[in-house]
Length: 461
Image (tube, rainbow, N blue to C red):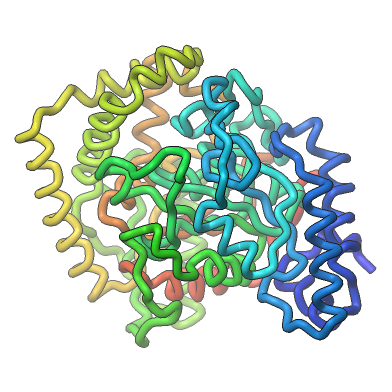
């Protein structure tokens, strides 16, 4: 049989459920893969081999007793180091948080465990989860397994590199401005940013977030196949009342018209030709599959991008500046300085105007999505950047920021987005983004499966 670590969750789960493969065999195979490739990638920065094998043995005992397996029983997953996991520090890439030990699992970790998943390690993020690149002064830098000259993405760069290289079938990530969608894009896999309120989230180590984080930050999965994203979303989305925004919404909604708004360069966004080519190929695939694809102008994205950054930076100034000084991470210091150029300080009236704009833009977008249930647009305006390009100079930072317009804007309205891998241009991965209305991840996944019916290939295979 193919090495077990090469199988997707959807491929492996039936073998485990029918007891043709033991959970311990499956997990041991992934741990061997981690041992082989993680030293070069530095994707998993907190290994948990003993805990994973103990959980696998317990799962095998349950199956032998006739227990009904969960949908992810025996599936190896990784968790990003910015969410609470019992017995581990929620470092968020910070030396100053190495003692911030979690006494309880965050909702997303608890839900994955309830579904039977086996956590094999915790993945890297930039300091403060602040960049689309992954390096920090505590855990070091993560390498892109497709091309070591490129960023693995951020802030869930460790998650993207892990799943692309076979260190677990599913990776957990978080996304406030593309932090799931961009690592998926850069590492040549798929990544789903769920709707606000779909996947419950709460870190007891940090307490409640300020309003921008509450309205824009979500957890979601990265994987090599669309069916794996569907499995992971169903597990992650289980009820947990620690998150007051969580909603008991069905995973499948009402039938909608198969109309796709094709948005190649929203609001004058500069889009490189290879990205345009990938979008046009995706549009042709959807059209061939019976979707009605038309070039349509959507509601504003640039304004949503600007408002999102304004709100995000207002919060960081209040909650993060002291931590920034204490950590003194060179990358984070530089990125923060550049962001303050783009986002002047705001007062209470400005905050009220920003939240008012969110209501208007959300209304415009949801009205648009009622007529055009799917939007096909760039993930990024450029192919994956050279690693650490954002800290090369202020001009380089500005170019990166402009290319990420769609990724930053979508969370401002609480909308879901899906990165679908679409091959590569030379050694550089490329992909496309699909956007849908709130709680219509089912539409994203159905269209995503049309675009990518087979699992993407493994890096370093």
